[in-house]
Length: 391
Image (cartoon, rainbow, N blue to C red; front, side, top):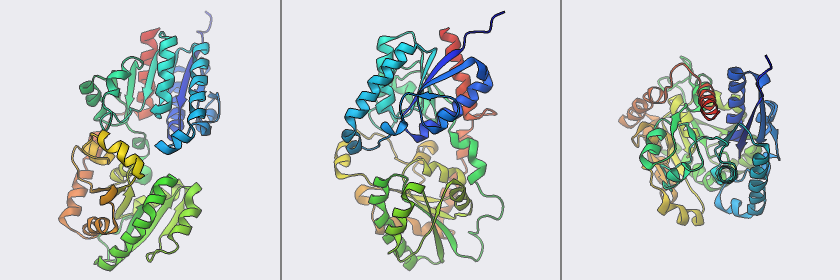
């Protein structure tokens, strides 16, 4: 009997985090369906290319963030959208998977669905329809056959908003929780030693530039008011590490700046509290059990555009998963050294505020549980189901 025809799967991502998700999905699909049966093409970075995906162009061509940056690169991004959609239609894959970066990937999906409606499309990572522009959910039904959600509340949100069929497959952090959750004795909160305070000003230059000065002034106030001494660790992404060293050189509280993922997770395991920019890092901190205060600032132009559109009860992922605003969040004009220091101070002692956060964070594991499967395995299983249904 002849070998079955190889399956041609297209995966299109738009930035580094999507590239990592895509690589894990490829590995899980190889395990599930057999590597010899699969061919991968689309748009990805180093991680997916290492797994065998042939990328149409470098991921750096489209990996831009923020309204101003997107506008500046708009001609290139539009060209790459058209190029990707044209190539996908010609290739006629058995399945198209789009991953995150909706400003890029969803435009590709719409174009492919219009010209080749027989190609099934899976979306891996939901746009934040529960936070802003909720009308996008219903529009997605026209070009997404199944949505793979990273957060447990998203299937219900899409059902409520008329979105496509959605399955919670689990956040990729679940696969790595052992790396950043402390072993017994790694945290010293109840010991007679200086506390370990994590400071996380963001992984993008725009975030760091807006928060770094405010964070430095916050630490100065905190040092003056805290009943316990503390030491500061600042995990920095490699491409911003030197800039962060230069910009923190004048801080009155000198941070220990560490680079690399291993050093970051080590800092998480020993941390007693954190001051962080809003983003995925708040979920990392929550799963690690670290009480935190979250800060966020955008440009004035972005604030004017986005403020009327935001519908979520919180911008903190941990709060959204918990279903309550357990984590203090100081946004835009409320993000000042005085307000941040006042919110952080109770977390440095055995106070009711700290105990409430610790109790809330203990609920995260149960809320994010998906059983025995790993997120990438569950995602691969749903992808296979969609393939079989359409074949």
